[in-house]
Image (cartoon, rainbow, N blue to C red; front, side, top):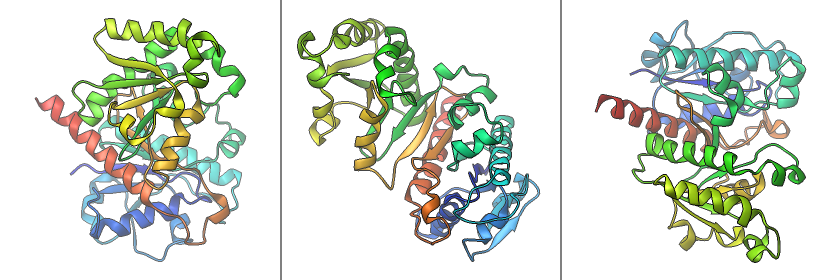
Length: 331
């Protein structure tokens, strides 16, 4: 079986620990074979289990049953859990680059990215807003067409605006932005999750979804016209709804993904419901890419306190999405 490629992320963060713990759980949770791309010393610094240093992905399946396969592409310098540095950032970037290449070439069937420190990467010359944009560029996809979805067992959300100041969100929220992200989301639900007719629910930007214009006009002038256009295209789009009533259990039963005007509107509910199971999946790419929905957590790195649930979920979701895509191609 073609393995998944898992980039380690920052070697000083919790990535090495949660990846190793994910491999440990393979006997109790179905986890497909994967290879870690990064410096194996970072794993050895935080975990006493067996590591198999492999020279290529062809060795992964044979090694996976008895040891965690690691493919080293660039050493991370001195390994100090919880203390990020420039060498570690360069290693993280090299592992990400190599992992993307393996998946694009077909040597690996899906990509799972470990958590990185953007501040450290910027110091190493990284010019992208995040890993999502980097992967999109390497795949030849415009950043605007790569959509970040956060997914858990009972909720999927898409922030329409992402890493910008909250005051900038109303200006960036346009009909075209909503149309682009909604189309990619609908297609992504079909390709990656097997949802034949996706139901998209839209949150309003303002309190009470603008209260008919009394509390803001973005719902009337931007969000509602975009929803009407999507409906005319045959996409099941609904709303805009007041954001504070969109995430209780009965509301969640009526949609397959919620699209929210601002970053925190989307991420607060997913992290509240699925903090240890949330997965960041990038829609709109020719490859499958997921990531655990958490950061480097330098403050607990090396202390055996990191919970691997989100990494396990990211690996399993990547494998399931890749299998669905392969099945669709075969049919």
